[in-house]
Amino acid sequence: MFEQLKSCFRKTFGKEPEHIFSAPGRTELGGNHTDHQHGLVLAAAVNLRTTAAVSLNGSNVIRILSEGYPLCEINLNDLFVNTAELGTTSSLVRGVAASFAKRGCPIQGFDAYVKSDVLPGSGLSSSAAFETLVGTVINTLFFESRLDAVEIAIIGQYAENVYFGKPCGLMDQTASSVGGIIGIDFKDPAAPVVTKINFDFAGSGYKLCIIDSGADHAGLTHEYAAITEELKTVCAVFGKEVLRDIPEDAFYSRITTVRSAAGDRAVLRAIHVYDDNKRVLRETQALQKGDFASFLKCVNESGRSSWLYLQNVVPTGSSDRQEMAFALAMAQKLLGGAGAVRVHGGGFAGTLQAFVPESMAPSFVASMDNILGEGACHMLTVSPVGGNMDE
Image (tube, rainbow, N blue to C red; front, side, top):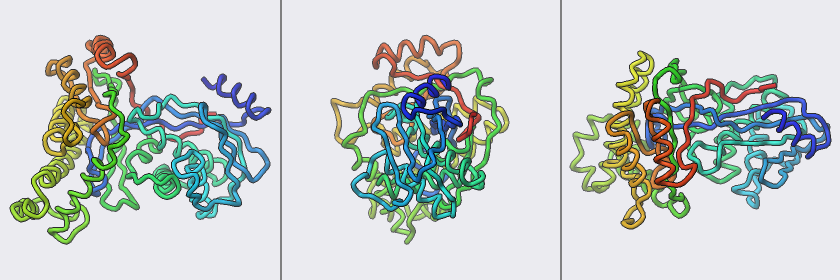
């Protein structure tokens, strides 16, 4: 892949690349919708990566060509938010560069040709991988690698929130930047506590599969917003902003009042968040002990909780189109009680996650592809490497 990448760089920029950088996609292993409540998350980098051939260009302009997209050019003399480029690759590059400049980094112009197998819309966070990639390039070439992986993640989140215009938590960028399996405590979102989990997933006897349900996230913004809005209503009963600041016993001691103020679905969603935070702790402990069976038990519990309590599987009022529910049902049927399956990420559409015994994996992938369409089921591995200079 590196040779092909270098060849594309030469054709685009007419010179030899000096370095190769890459950053991985990520998968959420535990903690569904817990991060925005300042809770706990378990995540992992995966083997699909966004990779760039890079060379300094002696100018004050960053030029990045991502395969399949127009050339992006950012003048380092203009690093202000540009509302005309909201939602574009240029906005992410500008935002990352601006963050480094504010930290005193003497950025110079560079050229980059980017190829990625972290497919957009795959639920593996291609945007976080790209942000981490650009941050790693700038940190390595111009800032003597002064920033650690979490600081690079914070810069990526800032670029996505402020310059790209998409609200997001910090899980995606942190998992991509740090690499491996990590636990993240978002009690202080500005300074999350990251714990590396030493577990050999390759030796677990299971394959990690990410399955595209076939449903699009478009038009579902209101569904995601409703989760946070309803939880805010719950928190308002206690004069707080997030569930992390409300002890669980206090929540249950006033649950009748909370139910009257916020409604039943809001209460059920809060129950899910409290329970999934505890599950993340149990999942972390299970992996640290090498007890994969207990980990899988928690994954299945989280999946049931997301469906029953968090209710982020079927869009509100949808009867004919329930792609996520259908895909979950088929995956559970094929597993026959083995392994584990759960909704992955935001929910309502997008992807689900399955842990499949190695002996069943080929037939599982083939069956899911047959049911949902060729290429719907991706078999992945955990990557120990986050944002990195490869050459």
